[in-house]
Image 1 (tube, rainbow, N blue to C red):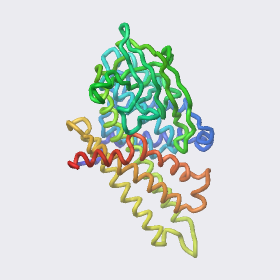
Image 2 (cartoon, helix red, strand yellow):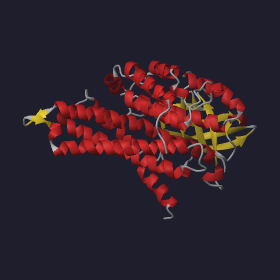
Image 3 (cartoon, rainbow, N blue to C red):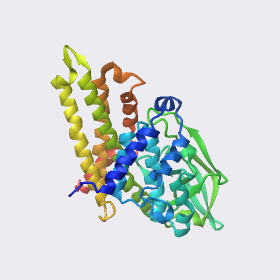
Image 4 (cartoon, rainbow, N blue to C red):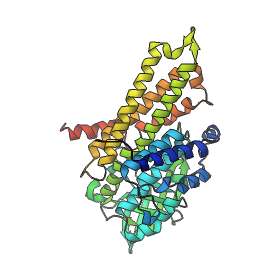
Length: 382
């Protein structure tokens, strides 16, 4: 495998890093404290193509292949210190734009993709419920066919972008006897639909600028045209979203790992104790060496999985391995960065404290580390 970047990919990476550093890092600490979603920055990200990376150009997207998408998101994670904004962008692109593009009808693509790509629409993906996390088919949201449409009743929780979303990919049980494969259907639900509302907004440990909340359906009526894919085909829609999300969301984490590595190296070179730079102490140097090893391995996994995304029949094993390793590498790197910075690493105004809080969720969302190990075990015949 040759992962030398093309001239176009290098230009894409460099332009996104420059944009992120120059436009997205102002008042990050203040936004984090206030848990504020930066709508103006969202529009700026749309203007440079970040919100429509994989979508075809005819629908307003960039038309980037999966590897180029990974390179772009890695650059965003490297240049942008607002982990919540990065996460919201990834959730929007990978779990809403991609399913609409891959599974939507021509009418749905024409209706939604332009707005999703230019930032006038914010997308979300809703499968999780209070009693249905890793066990997806335990969901209680029901959709009953009624009079030429669908009546939805139930709720979703922990939905990223939920409080601000204009369109949501929602999964509901349409045939309880058929199980997850055949009994769940995906729907496109617009803000403002009667009976559909955003409920509680949650305060979080990390990723605070990415709004997360509850979505409530009380006799919400949707037309047949709101079905995304086919009736009973929700598992396929969900699988597509998870393949892209598990493969490429972690690309942004690779960028964050690299930034934390560079921050730690700079601190280890300039912080002096006992008459020498702390980087001269083996205990410190070894932590930083491990950061480098995790960075290089994580990047290779992401690039390999991204390169297989549209050419392999199934990449669920690759995606699980990649998501597991990169997310756990991010948490370890962030923990080590805090430890290396000592008391400064514990202070709110320094980046590493916030980076650690943002990192913790990576082993939970898009499938927990335990679920990724379950997937890997099944592929190994266990």
